[in-house]
Length: 396
Image (cartoon, rainbow, N blue to C red; front, side, top):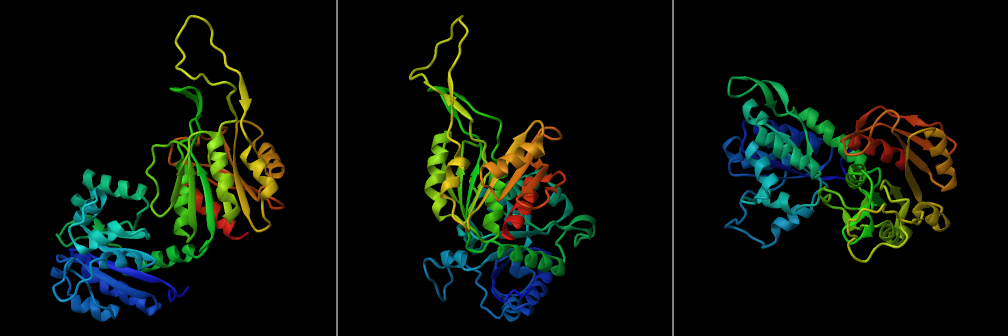
């Protein structure tokens, strides 16, 4: 795969591994990528701006407020320019500042301002890398959609041996190529994803709901974004941070989810219903808080709107619709029946027989299609499962 259609900004921070970065830039340029760079002042202690300018064939901005030239919004232009940011090396200081929203130099300001994907290549002493604060910052950034290239093990500049060596330029280059190749899979497609639970109120302070965390839907939204899609995420109440670069539509009830999906569906190329809407809602929710008493309390429930069934009539020929099914028994048969009844192109079967998909970071699923054999997947992270699902959709 040639990178001649891609724009990449390489950021350098102040670590000894900066001596490797010119080779990474040369590999990107050799594969015809359009490469620009940003350096921090500390990065200049380990390599020169002249070296980086020579290999990138572009000027190297360093200062937020350069004395020789300045455009007030140049950091915004830099943030919007590339298809991908690659920070190599990334120090513990840089990772901590980005995780905390600190913008005290040009590079951190640009990263704060961008909605483009960011690939971070840590490089530091083992103790610094394994420090719980550093690990917490890395995990925080991962949940916000930042990508990390894990450091390797070996001899470090401080004459110790351990984890902390920046990944080799050839390995980073291969990961960049694979990432950008996936970015083309859904290029400019409009993807509509639903996520999370719905709440059906019994009274103003109590509701019926389920255990859905929204993690699967959010992973699908983030992955679709990274594959080049324009993503709208219709989400019920969750504890998750909204993914960057995704249009979030917050809802609460199943009826509200139906309204939001119905509005966005005509312009969508792909709909993925990963949410867990309620099947029933109170027929007559109380207008005031229900007081506790000694009598048995009962409620009449009525069925909620079936979102996928309702959209079946309006589905266009080229639209792809994916549903989810959670079954406790006869999983394959029930999921296949739902696939056909609702006119779906794919259904993702979660089964409580072997695993519990709610709340955790992993899932085990089976993908069912029309006129194709099911694909049973092993237990994997929800992000990895999202990639499998979207790669199958991209082939349709």
